[in-house]
Length: 445
Image (cartoon, rainbow, N blue to C red; front, side, top):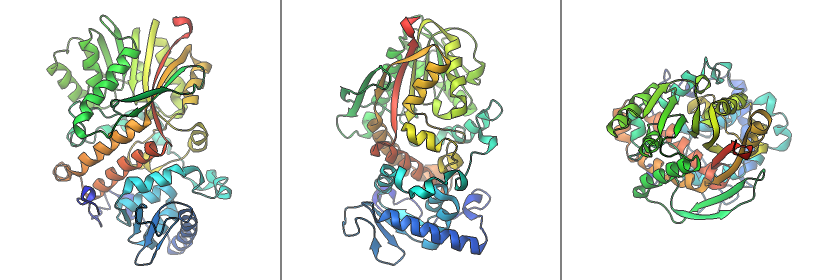
């Protein structure tokens, strides 16, 4: 492994009670058949890709087998890897990394290659059978009012101290906006579009300032100033609320994470704005009142596609005349969104239960069909997220001793590293984007 990942256990100790998905066994005959099919599909795919794959002690294969600079994937336990992928597809792919069945020095680089070819990794005839073989979202994880709080708690209530091991001083758990170049891009539905890329490779010391830049741009876009009544959907750890209050606004911030609520209240009080900011443990659907600005940073991803209409109708109902909405959203291509909206993924199972990424077109369409809100401008800055995730991952890997002191184990280390690099690969490849979108009523009503 490289120095950056040297702290990860190559063969982690697996607690079956904590990680049942890694220890459950299927009937041997079924494992053999599924593993053989997975091997055939996987080997066919990697021959087309600029990667190297070493299978146990066998020679290296792949579309870049002789290129020493191509990402290398080492299958430490090939049979276990192919059986996991055969049984559970991409969920099994991630689980087998958690279990140590395979390793990669440049995990992000390897996953970036796979992400860039996501739509074609599985042969087209099998893609047509997607509804038959892919896992479906459990009913208990759909983001109804009954389920949403438990879904949020499974991620955001892990431990404030754990998140602090890799976040900067602002405790912002969303893409930063580094200093960079901007250019106009093509609109989706007539709105003004700007595309931003980092001007250089950011360092850790740049992150807090870049997070502040992200928040201030959102507040500017929403017109937040002296006397503004602001609704924030998804509190995080309070940075946006503090900055809005500093401008003279009053803020209602709603969250479903008790851990975040507690620390956000502490940070807001320490900043001197306890009288201006109210942080409530409340589902966004239950908010009442009128607000001049509604802001929400990377919360729509946790809403679930079945509830996007309800999310935006709620915002429409509480937005005062002349008000503006600013949201920051991770987006995916519209065709892939349609193809995967009912799929249960590794991210759902281990990181964000109930979540799903919208496309820009979906956001535009749901508002045109169900609300009086229209997207008027957006900033696309996905490459900034790639750099944000790189810095988070480096920081996390450097803090594994502290992570273990907090009660997390070696499998968690590999899971979280995989999650951060899996996400970074999506942005670096262009498969994912992150955008700040401004919405308001037609004619500024």
